[in-house]
Image: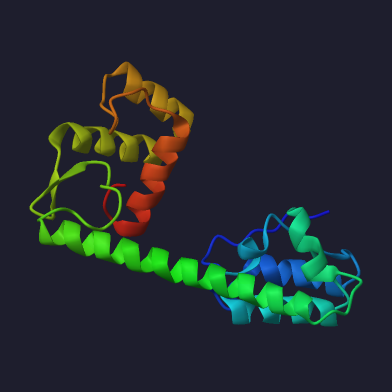
Length: 197
């Protein structure tokens, strides 16, 4: 058994799905008999990608199993009834529609927030607040961020950095205690963006 996951959109093409490529290689190599998904819409949220994934896996001699009982027959049923594929494609189309509607709603929400002068680019990075849609440094958080970066550069583990920040009274975004995972996330995003997270 091997656990594979793709942390990208369910509408992404096959070549962009490292988890799928690894799972398909295991099936092709005879190390796995198939792929288990939580639900069909977790396999793909684009009906063409869904059907291509199912076809490719079948061509490799594998099957797709869903943890949802009602999806098993439409994926791998013994019946050759063509309505099985029809229902699966309709469900895939509904998932695709749902994804597109979600994207539209999020875009409209971001646009409305930006029109009101808000910060419309996701969660505010640590070390900043929003003023008229612009990032403005928060001095106390900037001090904590500088401390984090300095300690990380010295090789101090993130859990120790968290303990030190808490002991010194540096504020978190929500006013609680620091934890190593939060420090790691902030440092990781700071390295990617050149700003804080």
